Length: 466
Image (tube, rainbow, N blue to C red; front, top):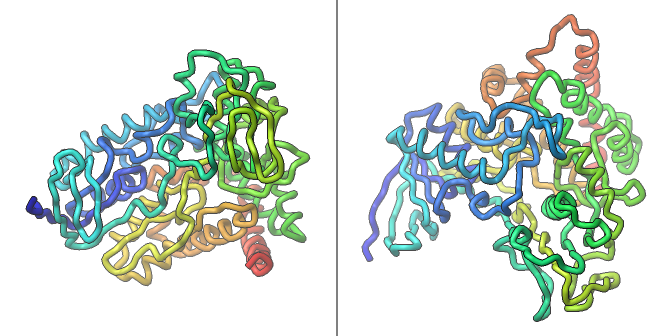
């Protein structure tokens, strides 16, 4: 079949959260044309195959595209997020991205959208249903929004063996259970495992019937410290000031983590178990209280073999039975941990430039593309904040963002852009401070006074973990 030829200024591969955020800024700040290619039927990337009870980890205010609000801006009055600003459900996020495409992108006349298409590389892609082949030319740049691969439970292949006859499922299938099993084995200690355990507890499963396999405990973030309004100033900006002070005053890496926990920046599941992992997972204090009801937390390393009557792990085994349901939560959310320059010739590879915020990062990178003429300058302001895995990755992760923040602070035009971009909620919180509010001004002083000492301490620690 002959190629159909297409041209656009920017060719964006992937219409997930990152691709949509990037395209939105290009549309808003330029008159460029865009071709968006994606394998799913609708925009939203992995949200198309997310488990039915998934929600955002952080407030909706920090998610989506810059030009369109996600959510109602209200606080939750019930549930485990009570008192904090809403976190959109997967269904709400999916509908949001479909509306952005239908109501903003396509009506602009500058976006061509190719869903259900498999990108082969070198400008060639193919429609998965019709077989039609296309060749697209990027007049300016190609934007690879698939680099930070998102692995989801429903399509994940576990790296351990599962014997025939074992009741084994991704957490997507939990709502389809019709007969109560003798017990549950939740495999995975990350945010997906947390969500599975919380869902089971929410639906009145006896905590003693849940065995939670946690190969590594994780340092967790308190969602209260991520809220987008001045009402939570002491929690948000205060947490950042406390973070810098804890790092600056620490005497070792271990002492640093202890201080970060003591000041409320970090949470952990069990006060008696030292975390070895840090993925930036965010939970509420009410969620943590629920998780602490679970007493059968299995810390015997990674799963090697799931059998009908037992599960074998690196350091032992647990007894189960033929009527146990094993819930696979072992998929890693972001599977590509390698860094590369974001701007390389005619290729843009979005990655994080701000800790915990890939969507804001994509919008920022798009702005860097529109506002700066040289690749050197673009990469200077878009230093990659590497995705963390083990606990000490927090050191490089935090140092990279602090370096970016300093570089941004030296450019007044960037400060103006940040303030006007809805995905950068903290700028508005700081700007809303009453200069006569001595308590809040003292927090800002603590933040400023400890920033450089904290950066110096992180630099010192990086030499110890290199």
